[in-house]
Amino acid sequence: MTYEAWIIVTGSLVGITCGITGCFLILRKMAMLADAISHTVLLGIVAAYLVSSSMEGIYMFAGAIIVGLLTAFFVQLLHSSGVQSDAAIGVVFTSLFALGVVLISLYAGRIHLDVDHALMGEIAFVPWNTWEIGGVDLGPIAVWMLGIVLFINLTLIVIFYKELKITSFDPEMATAIGIPVMFIHYVLMGMLSITTVASFDSVGAILVVAMLIAPGASAYLLTDRLSIMLLLSALLGVLAAGLGYYAASILNVSISGSMATMAGILFVLCFFFSPKHGIFIKWLVRKKFVQSSSN
Image 1 (cartoon, one colour):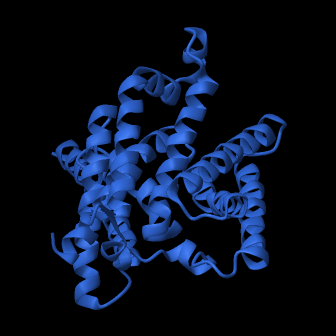
Image 2: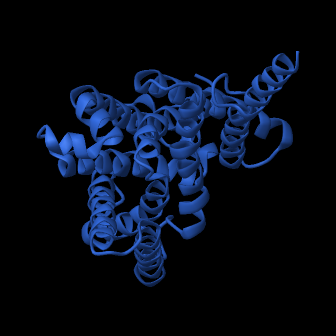
C-alpha cells in the first residue's frame, strides 16, 4: 500500500471510530465531555509512562482508560452535587490536563510526548512506524490499534445497542425498566477513552475532538433513526478524512488540521442543505407555503 493510502486509511479509521462513538455523545448532549476526555487522557498517558517507564501501547491504553473514566466520574460527581454540567466539565478538564502538562515538564521531558504533539499529532509519520513480526512488515501500528478499537466499539454497540439507545433518548424510562444506566454510561466512557487514546498519538487531540463531534452532529441533521445515524457518521468521517488529505496536499498545510476543517465544512453543508432540518430547505418550504397561501 502506498504512503498516501496509509494516511487516508488511518484518517478514515479515526473518522469511523470517533464518528460512531460521537453519535451517542451528541444524543446525550455530552459533546463537550469528548473534548474534556480527549485532553485529560494526556495525564493517563504520562502517568502510565512514569509507572511503567515504557511507551508500550498496553500501558498507554490502561492509563488513558483509567483517567478517562475518572474524568467522567468526577464530572458526574460534581454535576450530581449541584455544579452545572458545563462548569463541572471545565473544572475537571482544565485541572487534569494541566496536571498532565506539569508532569511532562517535570519528569517526561526526554520522551517524544510533548504538548504540541498531544494537541496536533502528526499523521504524516504514521506509515513509517510499522509493526514487524519475524521480519515481516504488517503495516503501521496506528492502523492496527485503530482497527482493534473499532472492533471493540462495534462489538459493544452490538451487544448493548438497545441499552445505549434507550439510555440516550430517555434515561428515566431506562431506569424504570431496569436498565443499569450508570453501567451503560461508563461503558460509553470506556469506549470514548480507548477511542481517544488510539487516535491521540496519530492525529492529536484537535482532530479527535473534531471527528467525535462533527460527523455525529452532521448525521443527526440528516436522519431521525439511530442505526442510519451511525452509518452516516462513519461515512462522513471517511469523507472528511479523504477530502481533508487531498486538500492538505494541494494547499501544503497540516493534514490533521485539513481533515478537521473538512469535517466542519461537511457539518455546515448539512446544516444548510439537510433534507429535513436544513436552514435552506426550511426557507424553501416556508416560501412555497407563503406563495400557496397568497394564491
